[in-house]
View 1 (cartoon, rainbow, N blue to C red):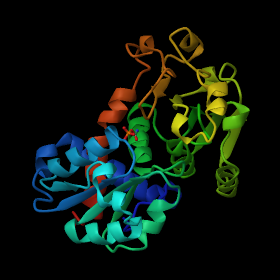
View 2 (cartoon, rainbow, N blue to C red; view 1 turned 45 degrees about the vertical axis):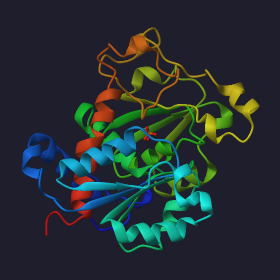
View 3 (tube, helix red, strand yellow; view 1 turned 180 degrees about the vertical axis):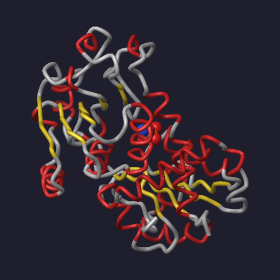
Length: 304
Ligand code: CP
């Protein structure tokens, strides 16, 4: 990889993405060949916000590479409670680990923290900003199911606060994709993201309804309304429950449509969709392990 830190999908080239995805495929085909690859290495986990998938799959990935983790644990039991700054904390934890994974509620926090450490720092979600490793596993899943070029993708839900959406939109500019964004007016893509996509020459279209666009989609990427990011709960209530899909909705879709979701879901995808061939969101979550193994292997110099 050209980079030491993984902060934003905006900085991932097609070459970077394919290096991770190809390595993940190799690992998935023969995990035993990688089981001692990073024996003795330690991954520092610093999660200032809740997580199930990202935290556990990074832990599993490091352990399946023969390494181990050091976990800051719940933020309420850390010295953050005594007033320690993020900059000080990462400088301390740098001395305990070979790479760091950081999730934090503030947009821009990972970029700032990365300026204080020399070991690789991976952004595992910074507020409503970016979640680049989610995008890598999403792209891996798309590549397995639909291919990454000549792709028509619909990204639906909370496009304003959804960091997985922002990362995905940037990463897809490396491929021949047609991106359709479906959301209420109040949850459209942020202006800065739209500007960046325009600058990258990306073809994007915005919609408030799924119906007209659904039949042409290869992939429908559904997202949760990010309740925890709304400054006013009334604003959340105005849009909660919109943009739900079920098997009736999908009758208008192509038989080959791949339905994805970064999870956790609340009520955006009805449970009756789970048993259809469209549903790939649990496979997507499981892909977090080989993809994060691949990323860690490349960042920790597995080829040297
Ligand atoms: N998709 C995702 O980031 O899930 P977690 O919040 O559980 O890590």
